[in-house]
Length: 331
Image (tube, rainbow, N blue to C red):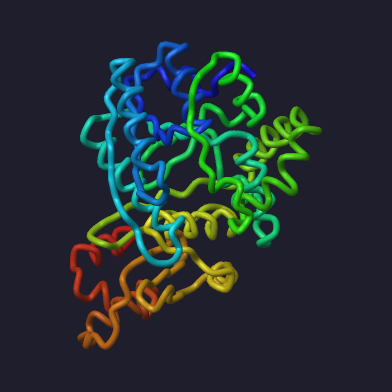
């Protein structure tokens, strides 16, 4: 492999590379230089390893060497579920940089092995097509457009590139620890498969992406003062996937029970504090307001408009949102 995906998009304005200093992001750094792409880098130091500060300084030195700006974020995250909280922390940082400096795209160095590992893990959790394709070459997260130019490169090809070019990089020793689920899948299953079936796996992911674009209709939620709404797609699978994506973007993972319940339509209370109301042509998401005393006229209007009962408490305290509901329902 020698080409980067989305080269045409990479040349639009200036992009931001999420840079760890490991194998993949270091290779992408130098490939962007080779293709004369204008970019800066962002590095997050979690202080979890003895080498964390060394890796941070290496990122700064590399950026200075090539006259590139290096944005550094330092944090310490204690407690459980570190990987999820670390992901949230770095995407907050990336989002801040994207807005402040006007970068066109965020680049991550995910590659083909990452994609296969993700697919395997999702299949073992009972996921569908959109979920097993969670790592896409062009994606959006919380309003940030993300490109993954290395997604058709496998790990062996990336390591060979670094070796041939004699490019130094850091090795994350935690990658060998099979207590992490992803590492176990990598060493036992995906790495041997990739060595033997690399080209076929690459083609399969291309076909799966094409199939997914045909089957899953995108949903765009509009936000208004904590209230979100979107027009319903033609099929329920697209709707549930769109709602699931919305909640992931605000840091909450729907349970399998939640997803199965949403397929039936109607109103649902998520995590005891958020209402999802699937009504006619639209889906509404709002904070759940209980024990709200509403006048009879408002209740009657909601009944005529077929507004769900769990949604009414929030609407009663938000006249602006209620006006929007009237418009959407054709009043």
